[in-house]
Image 1: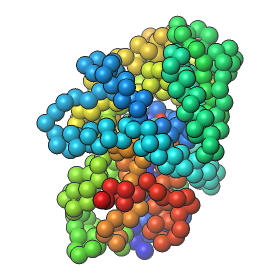
Image 2: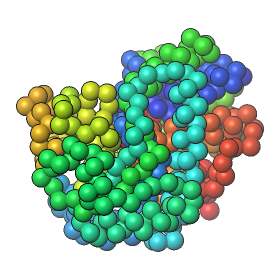
Image 3: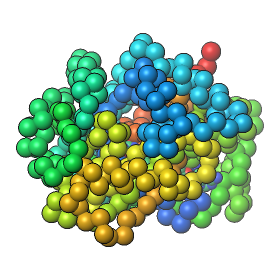
Length: 417
Ligand SMILES: Cc1cc2nc3c(=O)[nH]c(=O)nc-3n(C[C@H](O)[C@H](O)[C@H](O)COP(=O)(O)OP(=O)(O)OC[C@H]3O[C@@H](n4cnc5c(N)ncnc54)[C@H](O)[C@@H]3O)c2cc1C
C-alpha cells in the first residue's frame, strides 16, 4: 500500500518510520529542505511522559487575570479579530473545569506512558543518536502554592501508574548540584524519574535516514502542499507546487498548518498555533546535567550533550513565526537567575515556533470521515514526548489493528457532537 505523509516534523517522521517498518511504501513531503525545520527544530527537548496536566485547567484559569497585559507572562492571548482564535479560546475556557482537566490529563498520561515504551523500542531498533538523556526530569518550585499544587497532581497521576518522587529543598540541591549557585528561592521539587530528554532535530533526521536506508522510505523536500483533493469519501490526490501526487493512503502531519487544509475538505479540527520560544547555549561546568522544569515560571531546561536548551512561553498571536525579543527576554532573565554561573557572554541561539495546540490538550489521531485519510496532529506542548506512541497508534489505525491503548479522548470523535 502506497502512503503519502504530509509534513516531516516529529509526527511525520516517526509515522513514516513505523509504516516503513510494517512494509508500507512510504513517501513524506515537506516544504523545507530537511526534516524538523519548523516546530520540531529547537523545542525544549523534554520527553516528559509524566507531564500530563493540560494548559486548560482551573490552576491556569485562576492565574490568567494576573498575567493579562504582562509581556513576561507564561501565557499570553493577543486579542485579534480572528474567528478561529476566538472559537479556540472559548473552547479552552470550557475545558478549564476540574472534571475536564482531570479527564484530559488521564488521556494524555495514557498516551505519554505508552509513548515511553514505544520510544524505547524505536530508539533501540533504529540505533539513532540524538543527545539522549535518561536521568529523569527535575521539577522545581519557588512558591509553596505551586509546590502544593504539584504534589496534589502527583498523587492524582500516581493512581494511573505514573512514577514521580517528592523531594525536599535539600534533596533538590543534592540531585542537581548546579542549583547551589542559583539566585532563586527553591521550596521543593519533584523528580519524574522515568522521563527523558533528547534533541528532536537530530532524532528526526537520523530516523529519516534509517527509514530510507532500511525500509525504502522516500523524503521529498522543498515541496509545498497546496490542496487535498477528494472524491466521495476518499482522498484521490494531493496538489503540490511540483504537481499532483497520488497514493492509497494519506497521513496529515502538518502541525499548526493542518487545520486550514483540513477545513477545505470539511474536516473541522480545533488546532491553533501557540507560539513558544527557546534559547540554546554551550554548557560549562556550572550547568545542570539533569533536565529541569521550573514549575513556577513554566520554563524548561534540557541538557543536550554539551548544550543547554531553555524553552517556554505560550503566546496566541496568529501564524507568524517571527521572534519577538520582548517575549524571549524573560526566558533569558529567568535562566540567568537560575544558572548565574553559566557562560552568558557567548552568543545565545534564539528560536521561536508554533505549537499545534488543541483547546483541551490531547492530540488528534487516527480515522477521519475519508476512509483513506488519517490524522497525526495537534500535539501542542508535547509532540516530542508523544511522537513514538502516536506513530504506532496511527499505523495501527491504517492497518485496521486494535491500538495498543484505549483511544478515548485522543481522536477526532471527541469534537463530533
Ligand atoms: C518553544 C517550544 C518548546 C517545546 N518543548 C517541548 C518539549 O520539551 N517536549 C515536547 O514533547 N514537546 C515540546 N514542544 C512541542 C513539540 O515541539 C511539537 O508538539 C512538535 O514539534 C509538533 O510536531 P509536528 O510534526 O506536529 O509539527 P512540525 O514539526 O511543525 O511539522 C510539520 C511539518 O509540516 C510541514 N508543512 C506545513 N505546511 C506545509 C505545506 N503546506 N507544505 C509542505 N509542508 C508543510 C512543515 O514544514 C513541518 O516540517 C515544544 C514546542 C515549542 C514551540
